[in-house]
Image 1 (tube, rainbow, N blue to C red):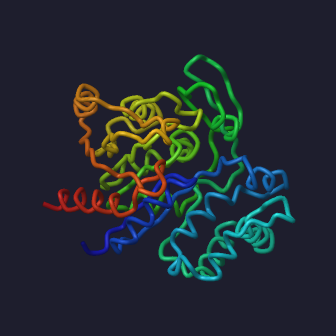
Image 2 (tube, helix red, strand yellow):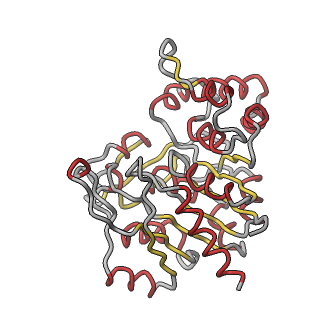
Length: 314
């Protein structure tokens, strides 16, 4: 395929799947990561002045490690039961940020330690809080509260609403040939990046193909009950109107009885035609990881990226 500049926009456990798929194709990969996480270890660390949430950065760094089984990777991901269950990587990123006075420098140092192939770039270096409005009109504050909502989100915003974008993230987007949104939590991992001033403009002004990898399941409260169309419409409401080239949707399959608690993100022929009427191409392929039914399969995702990239070069 050759080396193409790609950017993955997201965070959580979803973005690393796209990262690994792209690296398997020898792509030049940058990850633009949201800075709104306030749950778990990241939330505890954010209580200290000047500390930005390190969790999503850690996950992306690990996904780029040249040897995913190295002792450094194992140590980086190890949770310390004797220290509030913090992953060591979170503590290293936070401590190095304090020592160097720079989160980007801390990321660089940890990247050297793990031998990463790619770059991890926060969308902003400011502390931001996520505000959500549910479809039934309820206002929620904080990323963790959104993920545990009993109703899907309609829209989200940042506080402050105009944080300074990280220049290196905008430059990576401008230079990209392919931009991938997701997979992952739509309102708490993907869209928060789009809310940072300059990010949507950079996407709009780039010449890159822009892909949205729709979630496999709606297990989290923030997107409970949302189908493929409402996922797409949410992106369009948050700056992506007239800028999505492809939507990638998992082909539905029967679930065994042991997995009936999982609700797949649904679609039908009418909804697919509606998405196409918006000028967006739709790719429907089976992409479920056989061992983790709520995760995308890396190899299947790599095949999708290959097909789309080659089609764009024809």
